[in-house]
Image 1 (cartoon, rainbow over the protein chains, first blue to last red):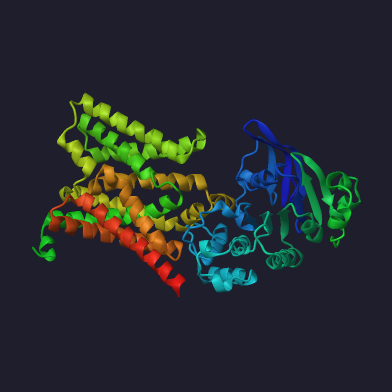
Image 2 (cartoon, rainbow over the protein chains, first blue to last red):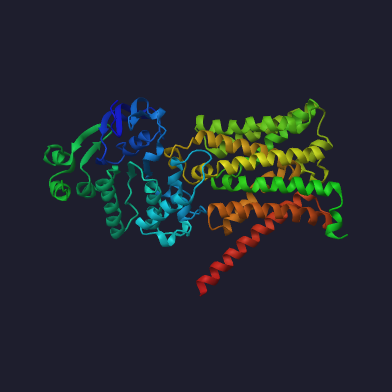
Length: 252
Length: 275
């Protein structure tokens, strides 16, 4: 496989004998901002979980940063925001700082100890997300939007080279959303952090992503956003008028 | 008799030393188990301990030597059933737990029925712990606490969000196996303190007390540890002064701590809402 940030080759995934993903192959290069879209049940989250090694595919090869997934050790290069905000117990006694610091453990070797440099990294991440003032609050005491920001802080605190976000803006209010996507754009443009953004919000994809991966159990389209906007797929997948909503906001 | 007078007796010193180490251990692990919704694993493994004690008695082997490996294997069995047989953790605990109890009853029956020794394991007798048992309790407690200290961040990560932990490179399978193995050792050690029937109380009560008050994960473990140790000390002296069974008194002191923490939390919430 090449040294793309992500390389997926002939990936098939079955869940209880039902084929969820069929013959998926693509590569994502460093610095790409990829919008991963598709209808409900199309396999987006399954694909993300397979890439992260959380779910085991039936067949196929996955490589991260040029290394086969089962050999991959550099997990500090990957930041991840899972889909379910409610994936954790809301009464969990963890402060925002403690949650954010979990994003640093992939950088550490055994036995893991967090030093002052790590604490400063947590400070920076919380400040960046505008939640430095609630660092000592319990995660369960926060609003959905604040919880989401704490989890985003966890995803970016380790300065990853690849960030995978699964429906990240669902719990955010419009102002926080704008702020959040600006942070992601800056990371992508200034630090060349590769982004994969799973979302249903085509407007957001149009505004920020430079590539689109559209799947519905198999790849329907993968390529540059401009190419997608000019293709027949555009109208076929999203209907008349979608051009305005999706492509109008895209700034190449 | 004054409280300090009790301390001159060797059996009370041994009970306090072994009890405090085991109480500390149960409390720290309890926080992890309760937050992972594995609270009842203590109960399930305690039932297996009953079966393993019966094996020891039938074959005339010191029960602790049989219980530790058997309960450790059973804890891995629970984990395996959850992963491979696609059944929920509570059902897997139920399967292994019923096997332990049924096996124990059959073995005890084959060996000529229940005797006083088996009942002493069911209800515990901390005042009868031997020097050897104290040493075993200290050594194993220190070992388990050291592992919790070394793997603190990994344990915190899988307890908070297992999927994220896996995506951070944490070997969740290994950490989960370690957690259930540590629980197995802890349950066997706690058997002497409160008895098989009340082991889960020693794991759960300090943890749920801490969860009422804690302002962070590390804070929760610290509060649980303090609660667990204080309950053992309070329970040992309380039982001596009131002439009550020690294991059950330790559990009742733990329950009082929990009710006080819960009451305090409700009171503070109401006070804040009024102001």
